Length: 164
Picture (tube, rainbow, N blue to C red):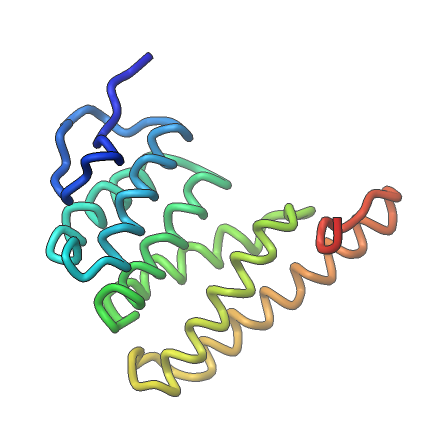
């Protein structure tokens, strides 16, 4: 078993390991630290360190793990720092990758929908300086994914996961 990046029971914001982040288990650990730093005002000064780790992970991974890392980066920037501008690259890369998924998982559809909604809301709240047309295009990709997911569920006879 590998050493944890941080001890959640005694977590104070510091990152206690410099090992390479390389798998889903590492992603989960970094996500937990990032979310704590995002939503806990006492830990918010450590947000930059956690964002750097998540950015490293996003650049070293592909597909679903990469998209999840990009989602976490965007949400942490918006909710933790009050601006989506510095994470626009993550949102764009997320939706470029997401557009190639032929049968997205329900959790992926949910993430895409939330990220599109966050983006549009950030424009209205003055927390993102991007064009509304860009956010609308992201919302359109999310709607298309919902349609693809529902069509895949109907064609295969499996539930969409929305109500299961």
